[in-house]
Image (cartoon, rainbow, N blue to C red; front, side, top):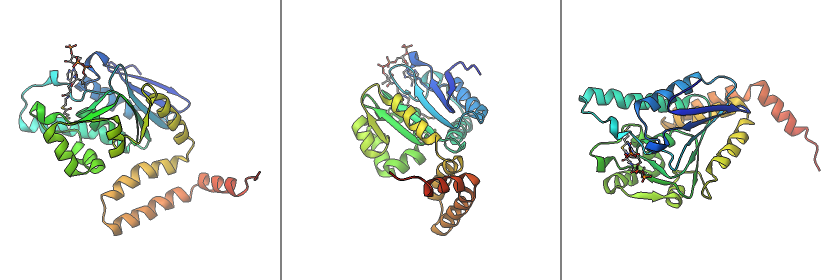
Amino acid sequence: MKYENILVSIENSIAHIRLNRPAKRNAVNNGLLQDLEACFDSLGSDATVVVLSGEGEHFSAGLDLSEHQVRSPFEVLQHSQWWHKVFQKIQFGGRPVVSALHGAVVGGGLELATSTHVRVADKSAFFQLPEGQRGIFVGGGASVRVGKIIGPDRMTEMMLTGRRYNAEDGYRLGLSHYLVEQGQALDEAMRLAAQIATNAPLSNWASITAVSNIGDMSMANGLYTESLAAAIAQSSDEANRRMQEFLNRKKG
Ligand code: 1HE
């Protein structure tokens, strides 16, 4: 399928989605958000893992500020909820998503990145929430996702001062899980995606849906939900086959 603002290819069960507005630093306009939503909706069984990256010098400069118009409070609420809906599809769509980050990962770009499950940054990456400086507030899920990763305290400071965390800081704080040399993020993301694709699909599904949902639950509900997820994953033929394969492996 052809999109105006993203490039999509599928190879060896890995779908590669590239944000493709490099002249605008992959700023997220309505068209780009629409394309991401349609693309995640249309992925089929030939794509088990997704890699998300950005064309050009930056991953994403966040909300496209040129689309700014004064909206009513309700329209802003609906616009924000649309971002949430699309990023929920990325996080809970059932497929692990690995992002390759470089250059600017700011504002809505950071919100997009933090809806992915595995984040690989190269040394050019930097992270920022400049909403305060632009006179607005986050609306694509940062209060929840970024707040969970670095803590609400640090996120508040990040927004108030507009500070820019460099790639090393971002890695140390957990905004990325991997830090690689400049230009290497996509290769490493592809390598990790290929590795993830070899896991049992139900294990991947449980890892990306159960874990973060359980994080929002009481201990009793969380433990019960974990048992349910384990029951589904562990009773599959695939689990049986893999465990037998391990037990029967020839040593030496
Ligand atoms: C843009 C945007 C954008 C660049 N919306 N057009 N995000 C921000 O506040 C970040 C704003 N952008 C930047 O700080 C810088 O552009 C970067 C550090 C990302 C990159 O710098 P640089 O020197 O490589 O590029 P540039 O020269 O600043 O920009 C190149 C072009 O991209 C230029 O357009 P041109 O027509 O003059 O060539 C810029 O106007 C355009 N551009 N960023 C629109 N963001 C759901 S709520 C989320 C809320 C937010 O995300 S707020 C944070 C918004």
